[in-house]
Image 1 (tube, rainbow, N blue to C red):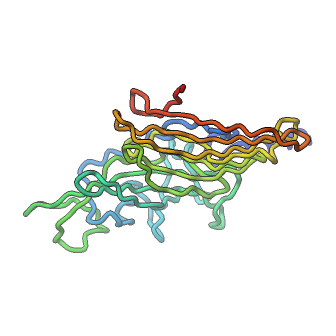
Image 2 (image 1 turned 60 degrees about the vertical axis):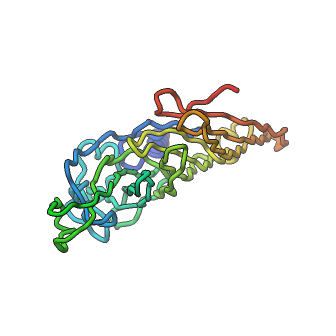
Image 3 (image 1 turned 135 degrees about the vertical axis):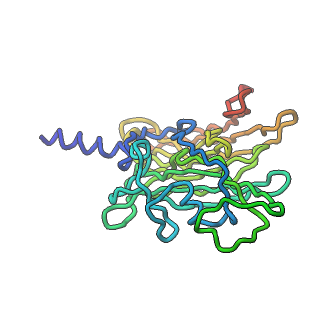
Length: 305
């Protein structure tokens, strides 16, 4: 009976928080599906009068039962029930995490990032080590209104009848990836790889492993373009305690504009520090890795120099 209980607890630990998908043990350079969830909503001609209309945007995209304190509470369909954080009240709790300004050559688009957390029966945020945050995105493209042109707006934005600018809602991904641990997500920003990409920086701690992870996604379709661990240690891992070497890896990224292609070349400057099982420090290994965008333009691949 004791053996059964131990195996059951181990199985629970290895699974994400009620998302229905198993979380694999993180590697030095973790691999992810290119797009976690390919649900894209057909939007048609839908506009907002402001890129910061939280209630209007959440209402259009998630069709919630209610929006409370800028958080949309919506009932998950079968796909979301399996792939996203569903709280104890039966709802997905989604808010606008970050709004990023993206230069488009003529002006500025707005990239909106959504986050969906999981909450317990008392409204507390779940904080198991394998609990990640679901991330979605959409882009708002500004359009100047011409005289006599009407605007199709959600009720929440119908405050007056005269506008000079509208923002078209485009390219919605409800759940393109997950990131974070212990119920917390990552830091969101833009990076310039010759084209603007979405950067999510986050930490993972579990089973004695510690990572600082850097991930870069296409703002068009949410595909993972490049990722690496800026720092990694297995000091407290059961792998190390079982007789393996302790190792600490530090990596820094250098972005080099490409002379021919639009996409930049990437260099990872790496330092590997190792200790044997007697805590004797082994010589450091210092090396550089090179990456270039592949011919399809959908992922960076390691180059042999």
